[in-house]
Image (cartoon, rainbow, N blue to C red; front, top):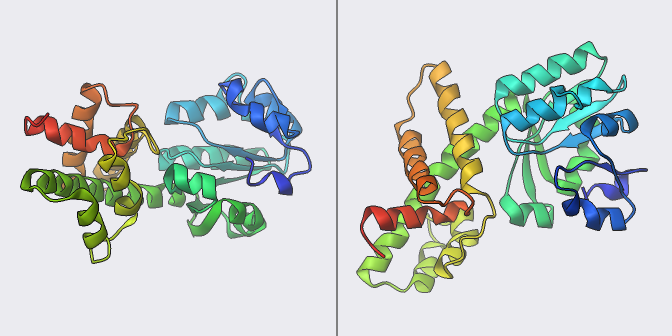
Length: 275
């Protein structure tokens, strides 16, 4: 919200945890009591919550956006959720003479803070082009196709991340047991074909035993489960993703659901009886 606030005449906020909005309120934003109250005042509405059930509540609940939505409004849901739910929002918006984009993001807490997120958008090109100045404040946006295409693209992103995370964490475990220096390993393989965002941004945290969430395990498991559900609908098997989902579910069972995704290394250590 802070990144796009210079483009907004009036900035209205709703947060289920009001304390999290206080810094923006101090800068001039108005904190409201429900999504419905926001929709009654604003005609461009961005949403980002945790789970599909949260999206349902924010849009279709008793105090949801669709209860007071003004004709001509534009909705942008940046939650990672089910493609079918993105299409449901789009169809309901159409009925009310409004517009909707699904626009999930990738880049974690670092990308959010720096305004360097990758934004994957589904919806109509005319609406997407109208919002490019807003997206530019948040990162780099690309239109992937019609409603739901942004969510499908995010699923592809999460499948790649899943494979990358297990590979990186297994490499760290291997390095640890073979007596290699973690910092030197990172500098060496990070400059070769193995170089990637995960090595640059998450491995330094692991080496410092920092498992605070840039992206939380519980949310990643949710994403992987959506991808597995969608792949089943399409009649394809993704055994690698299924394995990583099982490993992260193990991490959840260990009490690690609120940790960052880099904490997968803890589950691998337990699997190998390494303290």
